[in-house]
Length: 153
Image (tube, rainbow, N blue to C red; front, side, top):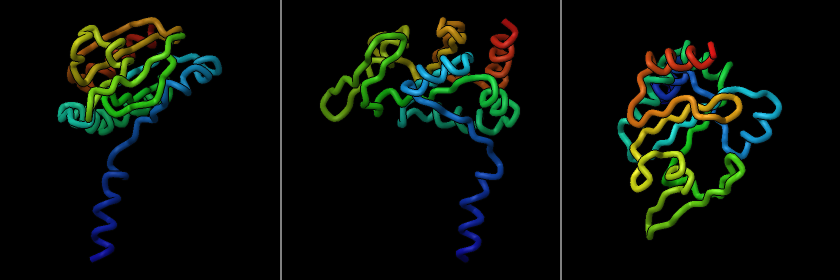
């Protein structure tokens, strides 16, 4: 019985590839060493679409390989990340609101400053200029298409 449980726990590891994620604090040094386009995925733990989307993206092995080899990927939890973040020479902090809150950076990245829409996708070129912005679900097919367009620039 224990072997069956262990097998069932490990099956997802064999079936899914994993997108390598980085942090904003690593971005500054990383972008100097090896400049690459940047993908920022802003999400929340309570967002069901965000979870489905992450699962779908990780299922596409070609997409995962493309992201891992050619892009810097930041997976940013907008309502649980509490540390101060420096991004594009500005500092952003967590804004507490009783038992909850939101990170100032999530608001700065969003076009909807009062209430960001999740998931939120921000694609930046290697100089951190905005290339693509999308609120809501991004399919693996559309993401792959956009990433190939970015690499062709």
